[in-house]
Image (cartoon, rainbow, N blue to C red):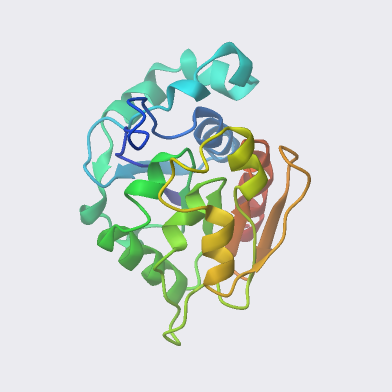
Length: 225
């Protein structure tokens, strides 16, 4: 199993002066879930090099067994500091692609031409494409082979408007994930705020929030077996 993880290169939280990036738990849980099953994982970002970690996800409150494992894992830390350049990645070389969330993707991956083309290629090849929390933002401009938005008519989830409201970033983010999925014709549904909730529709797998990362990883694994 060769799996590509695509992370954000964006580290500025709008005009707040605060930092953002990817959410550690949303990377760490799927990373270890898949790694422990023998997956060969490659990390890529739009700019290559170090992927920025969202400081809010690197606190004791956000800590999980997987984030603690990551903290002690020199190999994984090295991979995060030296990601490949997204433009150099080819869908032909991988069995699936996974996008961890954090607020960063709203600014870069949502509009990144290389990311959009890559997701479209994986989808065309009917390989699993998985996203969690804010990462479904990367689907915003992705089209299916029929020329329609990829999420149109598909069951999807992602970070909810009420969750965004709870973290008081509704007016900071460039757009709301829930709205974007609905506007593109996705059949959006959600669980309780902060509860684990993930959906699969064909090869498309989406999870609602950080708590959903394990469900997404398990669905991705099941799709590859």
